[in-house]
Length: 161
Image (cartoon, rainbow, N blue to C red; front, side, top):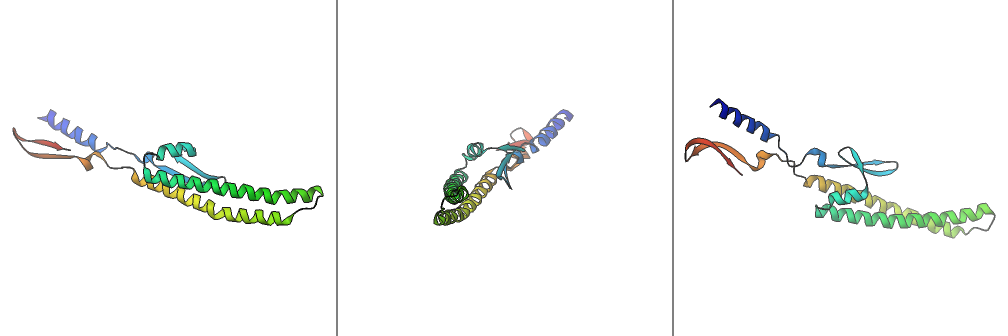
């Protein structure tokens, strides 16, 4: 009888620590001066690794793809604007006559890229939050029940899952 009680107690205790997902499966986002960085299990991951990790969650994956599209468009506008600003400045430094209207258009493109980059940051945060909320952090006991009840052979333990 002691042996059975010990085995049941051991099973009950060991099953309570069984998890399908752990907190280390979550992805964290850190914004810094060099841009956004993604971490999983305390290790930095790249955008491609993030995409592969998020891919099973359709909603998060769609948000991340939309964010990447915003990043691409923002980059195109920012780099084009930077070129249009830098070319007249370079011409002025070299002694040629600069076309300042070109620099004004470039400044407009750079300013236009700012809300697009903000949209990229917002959608990336939403994608990571959606992914993290979709993780199952439930334990074994949330899906299964261990009960003492009457069985065909008398009083016993039943496990329902």
